[in-house]
Amino acid sequence: MVGDLILPEQRGRCRTCGYLAERLMDSSLEPALREVNEAQRNAFVGEVIVPGRGVVSVVPHCYVKAADLEREYGTPLNRMQHAALVFDRDRKCPKWHPYTPGFGPREHLAHVRAQQEELERKKYQERQEENRRQFELAMQRDSKRFQIKITIVLAIIAFVAALLPFALARFLK
Image (tube, rainbow, N blue to C red; front, side):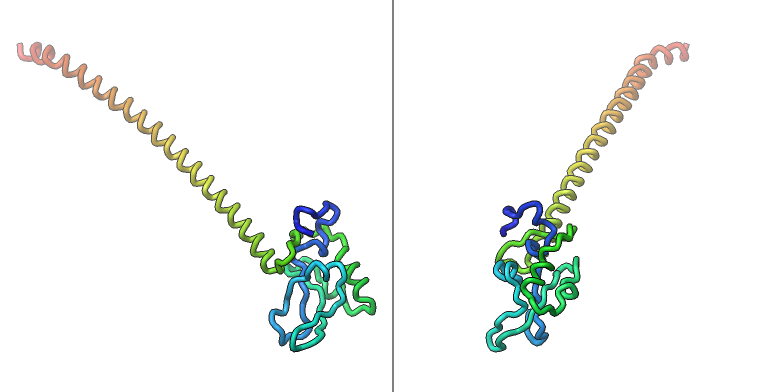
C-alpha cells in the first residue's frame, strides 16, 4: 500500500492515509499514539500486545484531526468489521496523505511539512532572483539615461567652449 500504488478511489480514505494512528487506551504507556501498520489496516482488532503489559485496548485516531475516528469507532461488539467501515469511509479528506509502511503519523506529517518548506524555499529563491533581475534592468536603464545626459552636457560644454573665443573677441573689441 505504498503511496505510488494507491488507486485513485482509495485516496481520501483512512485505510490508505499516513495519518491513521492508534491511541493506546492505557495512558501510562508512551507514546500514546502509534502507527497503524499494514496488517492492522486490513484487520484492526482494537487490541495490541505490549511487552510487560499484555493486551492493551487501542482505538483508531486521526493524527491531524481531520476526522473523529475514536467517536466513530466507539466500542462495537465486532471491532474488526466496524473498523473496516470506519477506515473505508470515503471522506474525500483534504488532509489525506499516502501511507508509507514503517512510518508513523508523526513522520508522515514531518515529511509533508518538509516538502512544503522546500516548496516555499524554492518560491522565495525564485522571487529573489526575479527581484535581482528587475533591479539589474532598472540599473541598466538608469545608467543609459545618465550616460545620455552626460553626453548632452558634454556636447553643450564643447559647443560653448567652441563659441567662447569668438564671443570674447567680439566682446573685447
